[in-house]
Amino acid sequence: MRQKAIQFACLAAWLILLGPLTLSGRQVPITIVHTTDLHGHILPTRDYDGREDVGGFLRCATVIEQLREEAPDLLLVDCGDLYQGTLVGYLTRGRIMTDALAWMDYDAWVLGNHEFDWGMDELAALVDEAAIPVLGANIGVRPGATNPLPKVKPFVLREVDGVRVALVGLTTDAIPTWSRPHLLGDVVISDSVETLRTIVPRVRALEPDVMVLLLHQGYRPFGDSPANQVNRIARQFPEFDLIVGGHSHQPIERVQVNGILYTQAGYHGIWLGKARLVYDTVARRVVDRDARLIPVDDTIEFHEGLHEALREDLDRAAQADAVEIGAVKQPVEPRSRVAGQSGVQTLICRALADAAQAEVVLHGALSGEGLEPGAVKERDLWRIVPYENTIGVLQITASELREILEENSELLSGSQFMGVYGIRYDLHAYEEVGRRVRNLRMADGTPIHPRKRLRVAMNSYVLASGGGRFPAVRRIADDPLARLEMTGIDTRGAVRNYIRRHSPVAIEVEDAVRLIRSPE
Image (cartoon, helix red, strand yellow):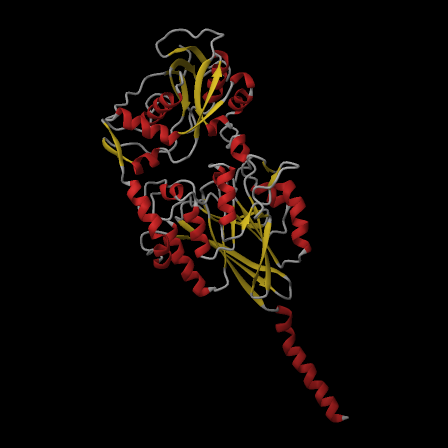
C-alpha cells in the first residue's frame, strides 16, 4: 500500500513538472518566401529611383536557396505579373519565368493582370504547361462556357512539419478595366469579397491550421481602390493569419491591416519577401508573426544552376536586345515643357498615326525613360514602350473627342495625361471639367465639321478605360457608331517601324495644347 502511495506521489510530481511543457505545446515556425511583379526580370535592372544593377530573379534564387538551408520546408509563392515586361519574357512567351519558378519548386503562382496581355489562347497554353500550382479564386467563366484555364485553382494546401497551411489566391478585380474583351474571351473576374465568402468556408471545412491569402492587389493606407481591396478583405475575413500582396509595385515590409500582418515584395525582384509565422500545436493558433524584405543588390551572385538552365533563352534575348533599329538626331525626352507633349509622347503618337492611318492620336508616355542621340537599339525601345498594348481606331465626332479631352484634363498633373497629335486646343485648367477644352481644331488650324467622324487612335489600355481613369473613352468605344477597329498592331512594333523608316528621326515637340491656368 505504501509502495503504491509512493508511486502515485511520483506520478503526480512528474505530471506537475510536465504540465507547463504540455500546456505550451510544440511551436512550429512556418517560413513563407515571396516574390511579386517580376515582369520578366530574370536579370538585374534599374529601379524607379535610378539605381542600376539591382534585382533580377537569378539573384533572388540565390537568396531563396540560402533561406532553404535555414528552413528546408519553407513555402515559396509569387503574387503575379510574372513574365510581361522584358524582351526575354516576350520571346519565350513567358515560359522562361514559369520554368524558373518550377526549377525553384514554387508552391503557388497567383495570376496578375498582365498575365492577360497577350490574350486567352497564350495564357491558357502557358498555364497548361506550367509545372507549378496556379491560383486565382476570382477567375471564372461565363455561364455555359468552357473554362480555358482549368488548372487555375482557388487554393492549395501545404504541410509544414505537420502543420496544414492553406494558400488562397486572388487576382485584382479591375482586370476588365485594363483589358479589352477580346483579350479575356469567356473569362469573368469576380468581386474579391464575394468570392471569398464562397471560398473561405470551403477552405475552413478542410481544417487547415494556418490560412494565408496571396493577392495580386496592393495595400493602400488611405483607402481601397477598385483594383486594390486589401482593407475591405481584411475587415471581412480576419481569420487569415497573413496577407501577401503585389500589383502596386510598392515595397511594404510589414503593416497591420485590421490585425492581419500584410507584406509586399516590391517589383522586379529588387526585394525578396520573407514572412515567419509561429504555430502553437496546443493553442492551435499562430502565436507570433513577422515579416521583412531582403534587398537584392549587386552583392548577391547569380544562382549558377538556374542560370545554366536558362542560358540558351538568355543568350538569344541578349542578341535580339542589341539589334540596332535606327537612330535619333537629338534627345527624345520623357518630360514635357508643354502639357502632355513630351518628345516620347510625340514619337509614339506619330508612330501610331503612321501605322493605323489615323488623323488624330491620343497617347501618354509609358515610362520615365527617353532616348539619347545616336543609335537606337531594341533594348532602348523596350525602355520607352514596356507594354504590349495594341492600337485601336475609333471613328468619332468633334463633340465626342472634346468629351474625351475633358476627361483627360482631370489627369493634367499626373503621368496618365495623354498628349495629342493631329489636333490643337486650348485647355483652361482653372475651369471646371466640362468647360476646359476650347478652340478645338485640326493641327493646321482648320475647324472640325460637327458631323465629320475623325479616325482617332488610342492604345488598348486606354480603350478599356485605363483602369477606370477613362470611363468616357470606354463608353464611346463600346458604342457601335464609333466602329472600333482593333488593328492588332502593337505599340512597340509601330514605334520600331517608324524609327526604321524615318531614321535618323528628328522629333520637334509642337505646342498642340495651349495651357491656360488662370482667366486671361
